[in-house]
Image (tube, rainbow, N blue to C red; front, side):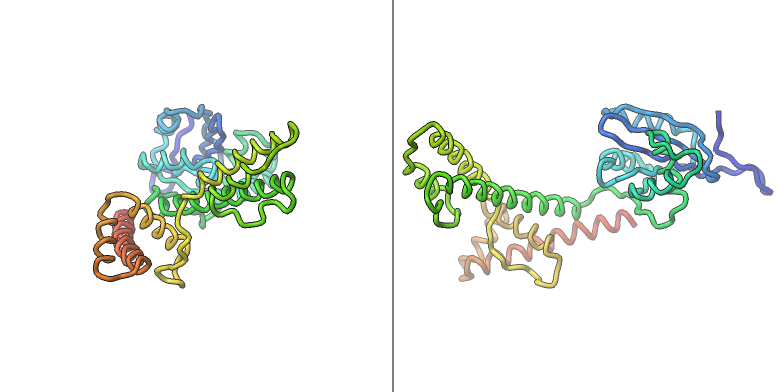
Length: 294
């Protein structure tokens, strides 16, 4: 069995082993290489609840090891996060880095999972600017929420465009107004009197699309005020979404908002005050996460 040691003038020393991982939806292939880019061992595990356990059991022989995961923020996200949670050192290898190693390598240019994993490990060995994978914190959570609401807005726009196009096939000139309320568009659809099977089918599809718009219509307020116009827009939007969500339920945020309104503030002013309080809480969490990682 290959060992992860080197003999120097000072005696036997442990070598840092780099384990490249080629992640896929159904399986993950890992290849361990030493500092001389020699392959020590490889393994393929099925994507399942025990994938991290199996990989770590296989890698136990390598005391000093670094895991190099291709697309650690993409297809390899879950595996990379599981390894970090288990206390492993993980770096993110962009696909283009591994591809260059595979193409330029002599005798190892054939594309398959073991060669890909080997190329990922070698790319990590040769690079000193790779991003270290860290456990997700509150900033990542806010980014995820921001992306979700942005996607919801795009889905609503897509449904509105499809509905407008369908109405043009039903009514001369279409709806004749911007689709902002479901009640108004449903009235237009109900007033349409189909004369054949095609017309009836169009009417049914239009009703379904109007239901889709109703689903996304409550994805968030369209207030454009921001805490700081020179700040991070995505973060400011996430704070706005949190504030609006607080107002929809019996929360401490709702109680704070009601107090500000009772003090004479307008609705917009009270919301801005609530967003400032929320930003203070978020900042404290971000600062605490930074201290834990340092």
